[in-house]
Amino acid sequence: MGVLSGVKIIEMAGLGPGPFCGMLLADLGADVIAVERPTEDVGNLRPWSLCSRGKRSIVLDIKKPEAVDTFLKLVDGADALIEGNRPGVMERLGIGPDVCLARRPSLVYGRMTGWGQYGPLLQAAGHDANYVALSGALWLATQPGQPPEAPPTILGDAAGGALYLAVGILGGILRARKDGTGQVIDAAMVDGSAHLMSLLLSFLHTDYDLSIANARPGALRKHFDRTYVCSDGEWIVVQAEEPKFYAEFLKHLGLDHDERFAENQRGNPNVWGPLGDELAALFKTRTRAEWSEMLEGTDTCFTPVLSMPEAAVHPHMLARDVYRTVDGVLQPNPAPRFSATPSAELRSIPVRGAHTADILSELGLNEERIEALRRTGVLGSA
Image (cartoon, rainbow, N blue to C red):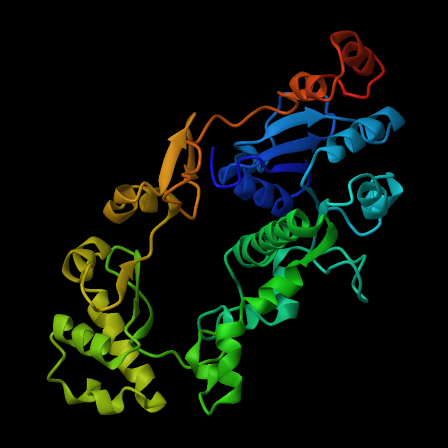
């Protein structure tokens, strides 16, 4: 069920971005088989267990030759493969692109890394913040005078990494179904997070001052485009950029006749600080809930800043059924939405190795052969 029904993906289970990409494709209906490493507790959940939803799980000790043979049999029937190891690891295991594409010429071999498959930093360790710092994205991410910080995992791992890998895999599958030619997708978080800045980079070629257009260390912050704290310590955000929305913002706050806030002063950086201080004092006079009751749903470009549990019960999010709780775990429903081929309903997160026997049976292995693999440790302790 779903727009990708009939697509088979093999995922070499790893850290966050790879499993996130696999989850996205599973949400859209692909049959994603996660090949997981053996552990002492085969049924334990992963730290990123939510990203295992909708997948089937098989445990293989890929360091054993028979496990490699089994992995390659999975590849024989796959449209794409996802792996997130450091460059060279899959080759050393005997399941690199050359081997897999020789067996399955139409395979789309998706590689998820921080730095990419070549370059001076090829083998350097890193995490989300490192990649978005080098791409230039982190430079834009912070309130004036504060250390550069971005929400963890969102900008690099998820947006710059997993989503770009998903687009690459789908594009590769479309091409392969057209002419039978597979290929390697080199999805680097440093590349994707740079590409995400395309809208902002367009300002570099104009007389618009990017340094004051966005929150960055030391930047001036426009009084109509920033966050404010309320009397209860909670936060709201306003981004009334266009003149008509700025006018609505002033009208709802009773400031539409105050010449200091006039439209002809809106673009003057010299007034942003003083007017921001005045608005900060005003927003501290009421709670976030009170400001939401007054401003939410108007053309003031206002929203409360919500935590994830708060977002889940917001009326708009409830109306769109954005979040669900399954087995006590809060999680987002699949996105985007399709009118003709809706994605599957959320199901329980499978434990590690839950589908090992079923998947091996689909490859033609009988019960005796599966038991023999289990005895030799190829399937871990499953």
